[in-house]
Length: 114
Length: 111
Image (cartoon, rainbow over all chains, first blue to last red; front, side, top):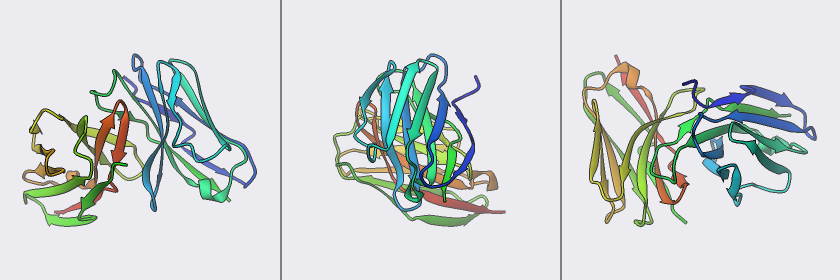
């Protein structure tokens, strides 16, 4: 089991550019989550999918953020246009079931917007 | 909205000592309480999950307890080792897949 795989590990971009973060959940897991971690705000849930369907996107900061899950093995989080305040570590996590099993996290993407 | 607090923010102990990390939450209507470990530059690793109907869970040198009525959980680490140095986060789940995280306790075990 390779775990949750995220790419890239690091992304440095200029303000105004489009950023796409990628995630491959653990095979067989039916829930996928995108989190953002900053020193100031800790871990914040951005969006989660169940069976590839977005269930709750109330944590998405604004319209510049969008997420997709075209199939059970792939998800993307896109920021367009990016801003310096988007700089953070973005984590993807997956789990099986409806909430009684632990989350498995990827190693994150460290995003820096200059 | 559920608020999760962890105190202290940082803790240093000599190797071999037993220690307790604290977690409190404001809404006692939780689904479960989870403890995670985060190493620098890494994601979170699940350590223990306590269902709302349970009082504690154990895994090796780790023991987590849950008191829903008082809104508290503790993580007990026995005979601490330098390899236990990491940030420990607790998270309260208040609905299907709605997990609220604390800001963590950074533990340093001194050899």
